[in-house]
Length: 247
Image 1 (spheres, rainbow, N blue to C red):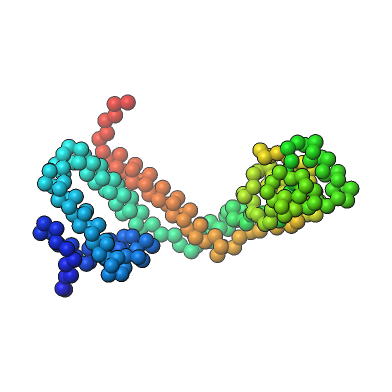
Image 2 (tube, one colour):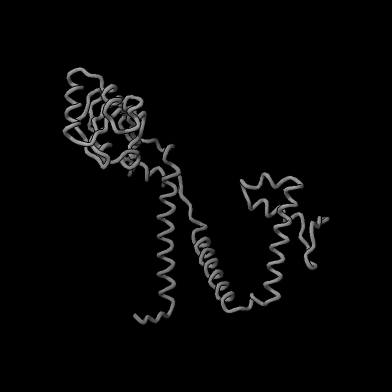
């Protein structure tokens, strides 16, 4: 195969294939550099890298104690990574295992509550109760929100739009779970102040299908099997080794 030499640095060739590999490593950032002009820019970077490497070798930095120690640590880290990769390589999960796990843990696979609500946020419980009484006497919740709420949502009558369980602070979320659609709640205290909540809609959690959670279950089982394999391997290594501890 003919090689396309893009530069030579003190006798060391930099090939177009070297630049192409560099582009591959850049992933999504590579697009601007795939043109001939872009490749020239990257080649200049490789020239600089080569000059740095050559300078380090010329000054024997690769023989320094700090460098050698760092290389040993890197090597140990890579070896540990390969140890785990080899140990876990044969771990598989069958369809039967996934289905069995799903059937035994259906309570774990539920969708979240979904809400649509409006609220009024004020500083005191007294003020919240006052506004609640006004609502009960026929005044518009939305107009009261626009006049009195401290939340930016006041501009749209307190409308928070749609949100799911876990997106709001816990006290607010629990109040939404307990609230009756169309009714204004009692004042709800959170870190932000006191809220009056008017629930527009509420969708209760439903059981997720096996198809929806299959990937999650597979990852869970694999992780559990990896943990077991690791413990068993370490037990075997310790059993076959002489370990002297000073603690």
